[in-house]
Length: 309
Image (cartoon, rainbow, N blue to C red; front, side):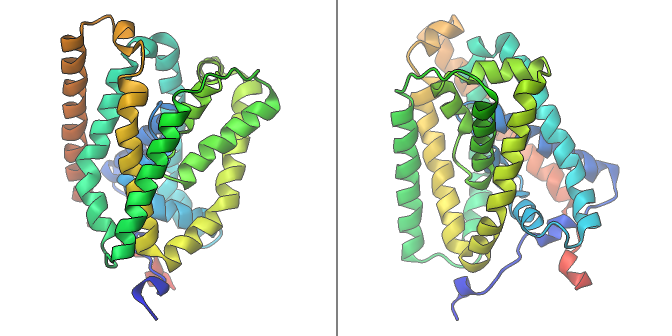
């Protein structure tokens, strides 16, 4: 039996929720960031969940929700609250002013990704790194880059309806299961992004109810498949995710940051625009590094949930 054939549970220790207020706050902030990632163009909530090391335990929880339910629920409660806060608050920001500063905000979050990429690289190689994993990484990078580049040239306008919002929610849920995929980009292509942000901001039940139902159904239905894949093919799956993160991050620059009209929308000259985006990118890198330090402070408080088996 090879290493990849052996089930692994590298992140289950994250499920045992620490009782300290600081650890609870850290998970709340993670949830807010992931929630923002759900609707921030160019990013994926799944990517941020991986970056903040809650993707694996979340998938395991959703795949087996009744196993150690109380402990898992206690751990993910602040993450869920934060996710809702992130979605709602950022929808208000989007509706109010995001249009002008879209490129800068995206650069900020790309900085988050860059700052944690070394950690993702180490995590992907925990169970070994063979030649086929480099191939998986390369192919997944090229695939998502091409999808986002081609999608960036689309200009569709889909009329909103309850079935459409159900499908949109499922698309966002797919972004949770498949890190690197940016559902918001596709919603922009379909002409639904602004309408979604307005609906969430105004607490329109015809928008947010089918949206969250579609999201929840997609995540729950696909969680078991994702959990099985990680248990059986840990290195392959993590290098696939790593490729998706790298490819989608690179694709953001031509499709979002330097998209046609982005500089004019910001109301800045080329030099000031590049400088502003570079500063935001750097702030994101520094913020992600500092956040990792805060997270490490509470890492020792976690215990392995498997110890109760």
